[in-house]
Length: 151
Length: 130
Image (cartoon, rainbow over all chains, first blue to last red; front, side):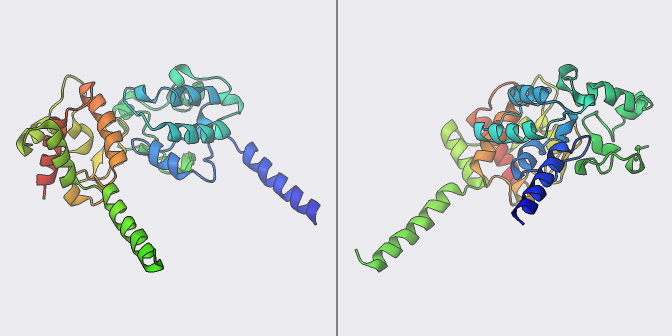
């Protein structure tokens, strides 16, 4: 019986660590929600590699044009979570330019048919606003069926 | 010390300590005004809130005009809960949060920290919105 539990635990651990791609980790810590999702949605940590996240977390006072500084304890906790859940699959094997998800090769390819006027629409505003079209992006779902491009 | 006295001391300590942490928007206005050694002016706060100060954003760019309803982040479009305390009871109740956001947002709007008078004026403006 003990062995059975050991296997069960091992299985659950590996399913967590192997989970990758767009999927949002099952549990998003409250700290991450409160500190990262004030100005934008929580981006799935798997969208960027570890080294991108670490650079982002060490330069929050200059965060893509805004001051997003937080207290040292929060930096520590959030960095740990990002480190554990950062992308490890091929697509994110190297850091994109400026550590921007939207400058990743896969992102550009996936959005190649989106016109400039859509990006500039007042309902979209910026590439940071995934939710403008991907209606379930905050849940980590980017399924094509859930895409609604605002007119 | 009798047990009753001990209990009374613990209870009274608890009741006196908690209010020291709890803040509100009126107390903040007073506190900043005292630091600035000047009387705050809601009209000056309103003007400050609405104006760009050499950079791309004003306070109103994200918090809206007047900040009594949900605002939208100027870049990401993420909704921001109402800022005026009469329209959002959670606002200005946590000093750590207040300090964090004044530091960040003043830096984004002014490229520097806000002065005590600027903060007092903004608080007077926000407190005047009913």
